[in-house]
Image (tube, rainbow, N blue to C red):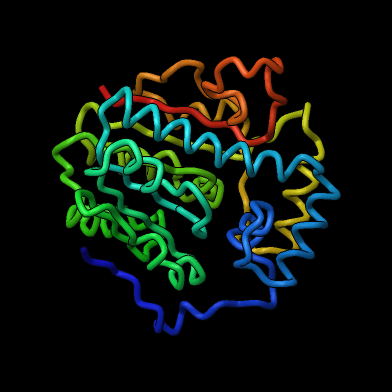
Length: 271
């Protein structure tokens, strides 16, 4: 097992003077890997958008359901998880290897705190493997080159992009980045993607994002549900399509349809 984690890189120093999205997300999920500045910003965002914690939890639950489906029903044994965030519970490798101990997972992130916690992500069953790459989503060639050390890119791979494409501005060609990653994967591979949306029905989300972009880092880019759906162009989009993460294949809970959250997601299969 190899890792491209280099915690002593000068550019990887942690800035605790400004809130950071990965640490705020960790705070909302009940983690301890955050600072007072992140907690304060997280609470201010919660005041602007009271449902924010619900959609953080919904996104995490969506990950679990998607991974379970891919392992159990689609036979996927390889995962490339880009923008993994800080380790919490039921990370991709834990969910996958619980069902298929031979599953292989490569995590990718460029956040210095995630880098510091890389060893927590590099646990694995003896039959499988995990690795961590310190890289930005935009560095497609670097990601693919290093992922190929752990994954067999001639066999189907699940590309997991949860809440990460939101950091790529329109002038940086987010659709092209996702397409380049998918083009390197064979038929039978899948895309699992979630994205914060903008919608007239959820004006408080826009206010929370505006606050974040004035005070935090990195900058967020919202997209409409239709624009999120464009990331799946050319793929066979699994039912129920691109929907609120809280409503993706939840089954019959006996409590009616879950409330919609501002994080939409879907799963698509490459032909």
